[in-house]
Image (cartoon, rainbow, N blue to C red; front, side):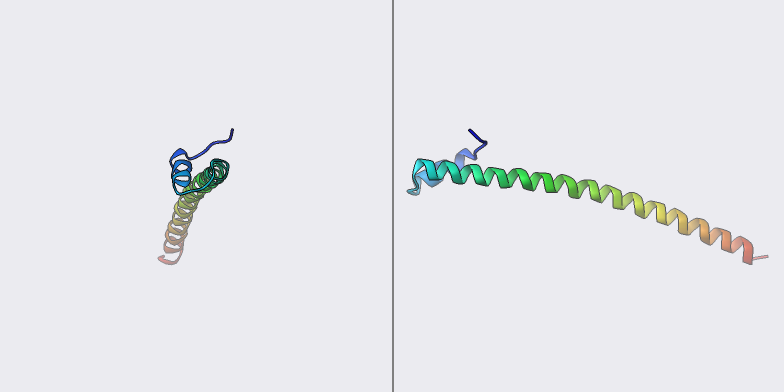
Length: 74
């Protein structure tokens, strides 16, 4: 049996849904929860890469300004 959200299944059964329908709905909700967790992990990894890129661009701009200052300040 696939992963289910037990509290959701029980709530659906108490609300009047059949056991099979409640189980299927709970499985589908659990699959969406797993997909959302995967997207969250990818966004976190992307955030780390963007932070690294910003740091590298900042160093590049700083070095360029320092070089231009040295060349044109003479």
